[in-house]
Image 1 (cartoon, helix red, strand yellow):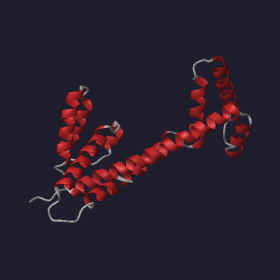
Image 2 (cartoon, helix red, strand yellow):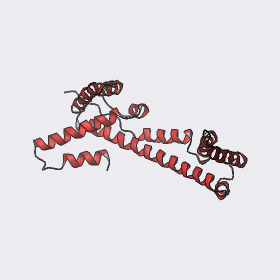
Image 3 (tube, one colour):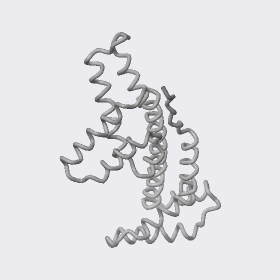
Image 4 (tube, rainbow, N blue to C red):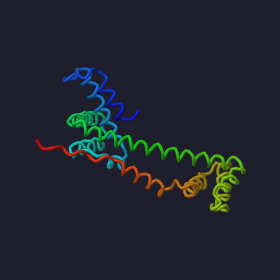
Length: 202
């Protein structure tokens, strides 16, 4: 379930009265507090991609710097307070951005898992290299054979996994899931990120 779907479920879980019930306001408040906590826990690059007003961004960044438990708890409450000052369109813009960012993250994670499976197969049986080379004839066969052989020797001798890691990088370069592909995915996702709505002057 996306952030937007979850929020809409909360917002429409009770009859659409002009004045929300106390329980509905409490649920919405908790949802905004959770959303603020998710912003605090984002990576630096991901956080920079989320549209938000300056006061909220400052509160989030300040909270990220605090390590003391009690101080962080108080600042987290302040982040929640700032979240509750946003109107519905502003909250929706943040939720949409988080859904997009999380979607990209899942895609990248799936790619990394696919690389790890290839590495495991290469180290387990020789036939895997033959299959890989048949699918990717442009690959440097000699380099891959050397890395596989050295990685197997490392494992047998319980040595540091130098070739093991180099094999993973070689697979990233070969299968197109390296930095250039990630950058393109991030750029595409950035193009989908919503603009933060501008409030009309009263």
